[in-house]
Length: 110
Image (cartoon, rainbow, N blue to C red; front, side, top):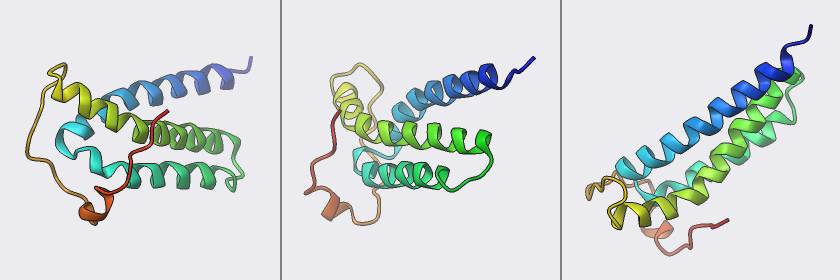
Protein backbone atom coordinates (compact mmCIF):
# COMPACT_ATOMS: atom_id res chain seq x y z
CA UNK A 1 0.00 0.00 0.00
CA UNK A 2 1.27 3.48 -0.90
CA UNK A 3 0.48 6.15 1.68
CA UNK A 4 2.46 8.96 0.06
CA UNK A 5 -0.55 10.60 -1.61
CA UNK A 6 -2.58 10.68 1.59
CA UNK A 7 0.38 11.91 3.63
CA UNK A 8 1.16 14.63 1.10
CA UNK A 9 -2.49 15.68 1.09
CA UNK A 10 -2.54 15.83 4.88
CA UNK A 11 0.67 17.87 4.91
CA UNK A 12 -0.78 20.23 2.31
CA UNK A 13 -3.94 20.65 4.36
CA UNK A 14 -1.85 21.42 7.44
CA UNK A 15 0.32 23.96 5.60
CA UNK A 16 -2.72 25.74 4.14
CA UNK A 17 -4.53 25.65 7.47
CA UNK A 18 -1.55 27.18 9.24
CA UNK A 19 -1.46 29.80 6.49
CA UNK A 20 -4.70 31.26 7.81
CA UNK A 21 -3.22 31.48 11.30
CA UNK A 22 0.05 33.13 10.30
CA UNK A 23 -1.75 35.70 8.12
CA UNK A 24 -3.93 36.76 11.07
CA UNK A 25 -1.07 36.79 13.58
CA UNK A 26 1.44 38.23 11.13
CA UNK A 27 -0.77 41.17 10.26
CA UNK A 28 -1.55 41.80 13.93
CA UNK A 29 2.09 41.99 15.07
CA UNK A 30 4.03 42.84 11.92
CA UNK A 31 1.52 44.63 9.73
CA UNK A 32 0.73 44.86 6.06
CA UNK A 33 4.08 46.30 5.01
CA UNK A 34 5.84 42.93 5.27
CA UNK A 35 4.08 41.63 2.14
CA UNK A 36 7.10 41.97 -0.24
CA UNK A 37 9.28 39.88 2.08
CA UNK A 38 6.60 37.20 2.44
CA UNK A 39 6.02 37.15 -1.32
CA UNK A 40 9.75 36.93 -1.98
CA UNK A 41 10.15 34.05 0.48
CA UNK A 42 7.24 32.22 -1.13
CA UNK A 43 8.59 32.64 -4.64
CA UNK A 44 12.07 31.64 -3.52
CA UNK A 45 10.75 28.44 -1.90
CA UNK A 46 8.71 27.61 -5.01
CA UNK A 47 11.79 28.15 -7.18
CA UNK A 48 13.89 26.06 -4.81
CA UNK A 49 11.34 23.25 -5.14
CA UNK A 50 12.24 23.00 -8.82
CA UNK A 51 15.81 22.06 -7.99
CA UNK A 52 15.23 19.57 -5.17
CA UNK A 53 15.60 15.97 -6.34
CA UNK A 54 13.56 14.36 -3.56
CA UNK A 55 9.92 14.39 -4.71
CA UNK A 56 8.44 14.63 -1.21
CA UNK A 57 10.58 17.58 -0.21
CA UNK A 58 10.04 19.26 -3.56
CA UNK A 59 6.27 18.97 -3.24
CA UNK A 60 6.26 20.28 0.33
CA UNK A 61 8.51 23.21 -0.58
CA UNK A 62 6.25 24.05 -3.51
CA UNK A 63 3.11 23.93 -1.36
CA UNK A 64 4.73 25.98 1.40
CA UNK A 65 6.03 28.53 -1.12
CA UNK A 66 2.64 28.85 -2.79
CA UNK A 67 0.99 29.25 0.62
CA UNK A 68 3.38 32.07 1.51
CA UNK A 69 2.84 33.77 -1.86
CA UNK A 70 -0.93 33.56 -1.37
CA UNK A 71 -0.61 34.80 2.21
CA UNK A 72 1.26 37.89 1.07
CA UNK A 73 -1.79 38.90 -0.95
CA UNK A 74 -4.07 38.24 2.04
CA UNK A 75 -2.19 40.58 4.40
CA UNK A 76 -3.90 43.58 2.83
CA UNK A 77 -7.38 42.11 3.26
CA UNK A 78 -6.55 41.03 6.80
CA UNK A 79 -5.51 44.60 7.65
CA UNK A 80 -8.94 45.79 6.47
CA UNK A 81 -10.68 43.08 8.51
CA UNK A 82 -8.75 44.13 11.62
CA UNK A 83 -9.65 47.79 11.10
CA UNK A 84 -13.32 46.82 10.78
CA UNK A 85 -13.11 45.08 14.14
CA UNK A 86 -13.54 41.53 12.87
CA UNK A 87 -10.15 40.59 14.35
CA UNK A 88 -8.12 42.09 17.19
CA UNK A 89 -6.32 45.25 16.11
CA UNK A 90 -2.88 46.24 17.34
CA UNK A 91 -1.72 49.75 16.50
CA UNK A 92 2.00 49.24 17.23
CA UNK A 93 3.39 47.14 14.38
CA UNK A 94 6.98 46.07 13.79
CA UNK A 95 8.08 47.93 10.68
CA UNK A 96 10.13 46.11 8.03
CA UNK A 97 13.37 47.40 6.55
CA UNK A 98 12.52 49.88 3.81
CA UNK A 99 9.04 50.64 5.16
CA UNK A 100 8.98 54.13 3.65
CA UNK A 101 9.60 52.72 0.17
CA UNK A 102 7.11 49.88 0.58
CA UNK A 103 4.37 52.33 1.63
CA UNK A 104 4.39 53.73 -1.92
CA UNK A 105 3.80 50.32 -3.50
CA UNK A 106 0.38 48.78 -3.95
CA UNK A 107 -0.02 45.48 -2.14
CA UNK A 108 -0.99 42.63 -4.49
CA UNK A 109 -4.53 41.26 -4.60
CA UNK A 110 -5.94 38.04 -5.90
